[in-house]
Structures are given as structure tokens and as C-alpha cells.
Image (tube, one colour):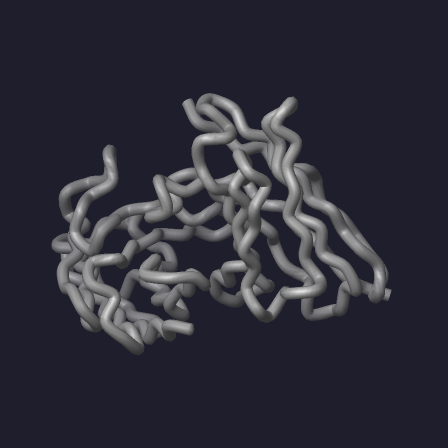
Length: 107
Length: 118
């Protein structure tokens, strides 16, 4: 199985800050990487697919980059509504696996 | 618009089985795989498996092999996930999620809380 290592597990940032989350795959997954946002009590929401494509309706302050084994998710200017947990997920092969999540809080 | 409506919360005793339903609307049910993902309290997301609603074919995570059964009823556009021999650590929210041609999971049900307790 492909392991997804996400870091940090939690972070605290101020409104307007740039926030960066990394995700490392245990083997080459090309661009087959998605990012999700999950708010408490809600289902995950797809933000980024194929490593860098923004899902329709998602604000442009969210972005993704990377390929192979190393990927980055960025919020260019943190907003109050961005408080959530973020997960990466590969789809290179079955089983699908998710990173452990990054909880983003306001400082 | 695509909607996935799951069945309500369940409370089960250890050793019992639970069957969660996921009724799809707003798209051709047989056109896309349906996945099941669970989340234990305070924990991350765990993929359980998927079903091809067209063929009925399935693929399960090894962890759940022998305990999980995913089925569908195309006449009512509904997918099912049954988990047997329940243990306390099966307590979780169970989500169905429709994929986008074997890539991302853009559509999710609202989740079904399954509590396993004696």
C-alpha cells in the first residue's frame, strides 16, 4: 500500500498568513493526488484534484503543486472560514489512502 | 445536482452487523464507482472499498476483507455497505462518496454514525 505522510499535523496561523502543508508519498504517484478540506461534523470537501487543479467554486487562495512523491498545498491568505482539517489522498492505485490530516487553527 | 443521502445513525452491539445505505440522485447511478470511507472519532479518513454500480464488482481494503460487503440496487439508485462482526473500534462515521472517473471524490454523503457498544 502507498503511505501518505502529511505534515505538520497541526498549525496555528494568523488571518492573512500564508499556510503551507506538505504530503509525501511512499512511492511515485505522478500527479495522482487530491486535497480535501473537512470542517467539524461535515463531510470532506474536494479542493484540489490531480495535484494542482482547483475544483469548481473553490477560492483561488487555495493551490496545490508537486508530482512524484512530494506535494504541497498552500493557502495564500488565511481566512477565518479556512479553519478546518486538510487531507491529501492518492489515487495511483488501490487501496486509496489518505494522509493523517493537518488541523489549521487561528493564532 | 448530485446528492448522496445516507441512512440514519445506528447503535449496535459487539458481534452484530450493520448495513448503511446511500441513495444517489442527480446523475446516472451506474456511471461512477461508489466508495466507502470511514472516520473514527477524532481520527483521520480510512478508505474501505468501492463498488462498480454497473457490474456490481467490488474492491475492498485488505483490512476489511471478509467483514465488509458492498452491494447496490440499481432500480432505486442505492448503494449499501454492510460490516459484520462489529467491534468497539468500528465506532465511526461512515461516508459514501462518488468518484470522478476513478480519480477524485467530489461528492460525499452526509455520513452515518455507527456506534458499537455493549
